[in-house]
Image 1 (cartoon, protein in one colour):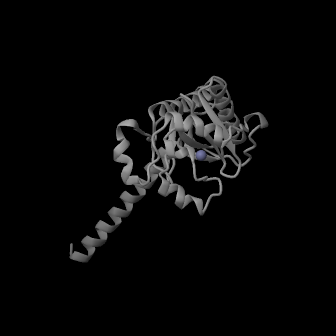
Image 2 (tube, rainbow, N blue to C red):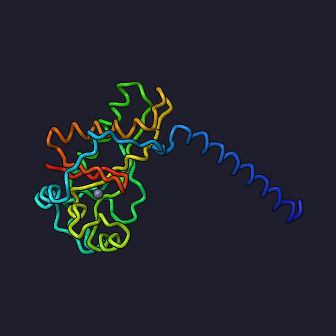
Length: 220
Ligand SMILES: [Zn+2]
């Protein structure tokens, strides 16, 4: 076999391998897919209105001193836990925040994710996980965001590592087992989970219509 035919034989082998790989990837992805909630109508009772000043009181009481920039994270590393995608929730690509929370806020997030799945499971629906869209912001992050987002107030609860956002327009389906669920229903299952935890005094919640998320601050 000369050099060229050896090369082209290798090329077709590569193509075959690539095809097999794509096929495997596609088939293994069938149970995991982001679901966009097109008809997201969050019921009025779940449009919680815990305003910034209310949430800020809990944030300043429980949280860290706000950080100027991301390099300062090291200074408070012992007070924070890293939030990573797991079975309960997915951490979205974070452009204006970093994935760190104080431990009680991390526990709250975990509990929200687990309760959400418990409710789906109880009613025989397919397993989905919630998606976290914003976590801890430094002053630098807030300044960058200010230009884009009018709700990013100077004194943001996100600067205290007590607060995170969960979108109500996207969820990730992670199993094909069980009944399919209408996408419009998922946001209200999440609303019901938050209502219970809020009633128990675990958190403050603000329904953010423009950003399509629930803005949540731990109270303990
Ligand atoms: Zn928020």
